[in-house]
Figure 1 (spheres, rainbow, N blue to C red):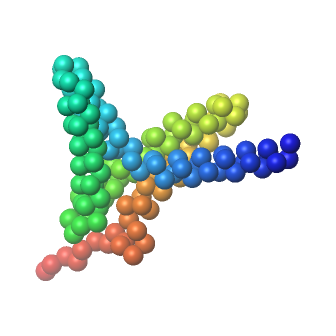
Figure 2 (figure 1 turned 90 degrees about the vertical axis):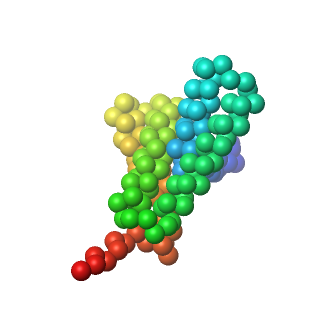
Figure 3 (figure 1 turned 135 degrees about the vertical axis):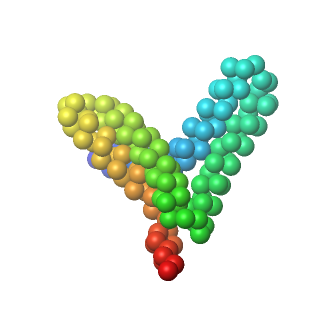
Length: 143
């Protein structure tokens, strides 16, 4: 019994770490799914739907990473990073609510846990897009 409790705790911690690592892919995933459903509703074939959805997801992810790490204007980089972190936080909020619902907590504890997981996933996405050596700094104003 003790071994099962320990293994269950380790599995929960691993699942939460996996959630924090995978939440950064929320925006590319939702973009690819949205395009795939749009094409499906308009009668395209499954090969076209699959290729377009994957291409859209990969291109959004690559473009977001490029803009976040490039020398684009400060406002553009912040907007792109907040877009990625915001969708990661929304995905984390839903996942945190589901985990709290499975645990059978009160509604207020459920809401608090959802908000906490949303903040953690948003922060994890932010830290992934802005590594410690590549801080976001404002460029100097030219006189």
